[in-house]
Structures are given as structure tokens and as C-alpha cells.
Image (cartoon, rainbow, N blue to C red; front, top):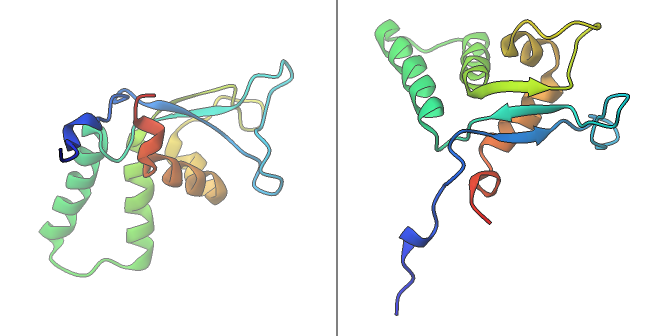
Length: 127
């Protein structure tokens, strides 16, 4: 009997928690109480991601010209920020981050971790 693709379902559509890792040591970053700093991310199969991607693509198609590298980077951050549903145990200079866009712009290593996480479907499949 052939394998039924319907057996594999993305079931965590509300987002999953990505533990933030130190960019040099790859260790999970924890606060004083030992709680991991996490981002809560919707995956690339989610409606959130698809809507954000379509919004950026529609905006680019209305301009009808090739975007510059800076615009492409800004669009990628915008999509990723829309997929960032929240965070826990995370501050910048002692203050809650103002936005995901700021975090991803100021900390490119964090953007890379989040981008890798949302595109790894294993993070959104059931056990």
C-alpha cells in the first residue's frame, strides 16, 4: 500500500517556542532563574506567514521594479516579525523589546535563528 501524505500534518499552527541560543557558544540563553529566553514563532506553513509573504509580494508587484538589496532585507525582516507571535524571558538593556523588527535588525544572529526555525517543519509537526 502506498504512503498516504495525509498522515503528516502540521498541527502546531499557533506557533512554537524557539529557545534562543548564544551566537558564539550555541548554548540556550537563560535568565537568572534558569528560564530559557524564547521566541514564539509561527511556521512557514502558517496562515500568518502566507499572509505576510503575500503582502510583501503584492507591494513589490505594484512597484513593478526590482527591489534593492536593502529593501529585500527589510521585507524579510517584516515577514519574520509578523511570524513572531511573542517572546519570553527576554529584554534589551533591561527593557522589554519594543518590536520584533528592532530585534531582528539590531541582532542579525537572532534573525538567522528565527528564520531557520520557522522553515524547519519538524518544529511544527506532532509527535
